[in-house]
Length: 153
Length: 153
DNA sequence: CACAATTAGTTGCGCACGCAACGATAAGAG
DNA sequence: CTCTTATCGTTGCGTGCGCAACTAATTGTG
Image 1 (spheres, chains in turn yellow, green, red, orange):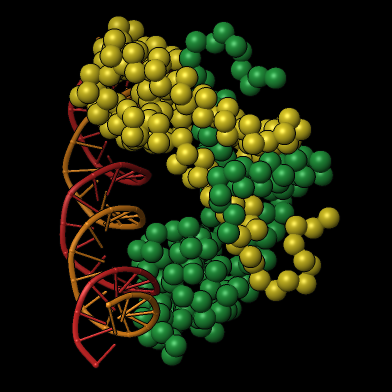
Image 2 (cartoon, rainbow over the protein chains, first blue to last red):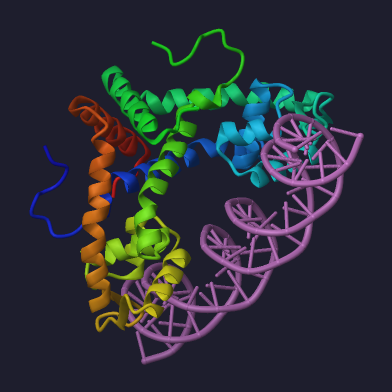
């Protein structure tokens, strides 16, 4: 079982899995970003911070960085932008004063409540193009590669 | 059939397919980039230009941009870097003098011949963590989503 | 033919990113 | 307790990116 002809001399980028995977991720991200970019004015780092802070109230920038696998400076700047827009607020942690606990403001919670169903619906739409079997196979494959690369949380 | 609990209030980024897909693509890319970055001093745009020019001799920057889905300025700069390193060379097309045909130099072909087998072997290693069935399901799922998003070539 | 519209490729500019260094706080060693 | 070491988060700096504007060449239209 081979992915391409055995005697083929070169590499066809179009059929190369790492390249296809990157293209797919960008395509899916673009498909999704219409929602949080155009309708809510968030970029990718900001959307990820909103998503994380929305489900883990009082979490730290560090936790967001690990959870989203973004660089801490990227997280720091996204948080700063969201704070300027009064979507999140920060308070020094009593237990460890180096940390700053991140929480959604009232406006932030309102946006989160509006945003999440739209985003989940987009995911549902996207995955609806797969049969049940394909979906199962696809998720299983993803998990196996994640596990191989040590990517799961 | 549902991906997460129905009554769940928020979104868990860790189980969100667009996010997982992005993380997976980055992980696979990092896994692969060891080869072309450390051993050959290429970055991602340069590697993609090498891969495309290596399998389509005399192609144009435009073709590379479409084929790799990179912005034309990114392609232009990658080509400029590779030309400085004498890995590729350009010649104005006789048919259309706006175009510049891109070809690997002798050194470029040597690098390509050395690089491609290593990269394909990495891909093979990666996919070897999937069972035959998982691989089939994963590829089928990828194709279905590519098709849904209009991403195939 | 003349002239507008389009296309290939490059470049100036502003912006977001990651690295490294930093201040502040906390934890560990003697 | 003191001093070193590690951690949380921010910021200065250099770099790579995409947008828009540009040049040069080609194609389409009357």
